[in-house]
Image 1: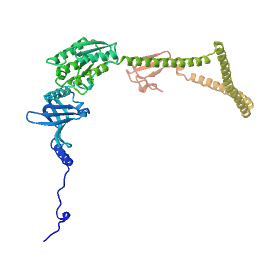
Image 2: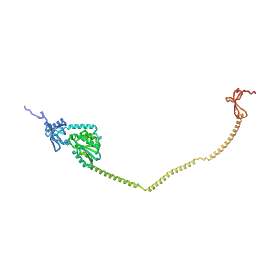
Image 3: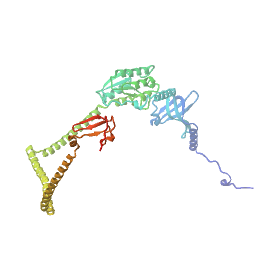
Length: 453
């Protein structure tokens, strides 16, 4: 029996990948499985393309792998690898799809053994940073006008030649003092620190440059020593560090007051170009002239204003005399006007008072007549009273006991002062007081006799 075959209904074939899709999936798988990692090996078949990309093989004793480092990363490498160099690369494992070759894309490269040095660099940086050696508040500003510059570097270094050329071009008037010191090799860090300390003690320059040209991390390691960092920090003048290229960072850069990308840049930071100073002075002179002209113009205007306002002393005196006369007239008027008003008011009040004042002349005549009548009556009464008083006085004189005593009579009183009128109140041996006309006497009673009728 025959059956018909329908491929759409009974069987679905698996998808077919293109080579490109396969390589893309393998590349993504590799990149997800192997993140960025450090790989060590030896450089072989190194090629630098015209585009700036690096192509080489990284190998060891038993295997090799193709590597590529694109221009954007290669320009920050800091050195050019050569055949047989031992290096360490930080790379991403991937697949080059066009050829299906497994390779690594290099992000950064360093010489073999630099990893340990880098770790030592980080430890020292962290230690000195914790001690405040890199704090921004302790960094000093560069002098505005530099008269002398000190340089700590090797006399044979290319960096010194670059600095001298830059200073001669920019500021030939500046005095330069060289403090020679080796910049790499055994014991170079102590000699660099000694040169810095010597410059600090002598204090003969305004700013100090600590410089060296580019090189590997091993070549620049003298500037990563603690003794150099502490010497820079303790220096008595501002320090500019210009070590290596722009991508190179050392401990000296962090401890210095200012970091320069290169030794030439350090020289440019240390001294303002003479042409800039001259241009600034020229601009200042122009501003000063303009300011002086403006000041003189304003002074002339003020002088003209004062001249117009100025008058001769005689004219000023005459003007003031007129002012005095006017003020005197105004003062006189101000004084007389109230007086005149008050005088008029007073006259009006007197007239009103005169109309309402009563006529007292008749009353005065009557009062004078009453006074004379009262005086006559009073005189008559006084005479009558004097006569009555004289009569009473005569009578009183007749009744005066003193007159009776003068006629020979006496007043007898007992010891208590009672006047005795009868012999019945007298006892024998009583003490009696006898008052006479001219005095008194105390007498004793010997006998008491009664007057018989």
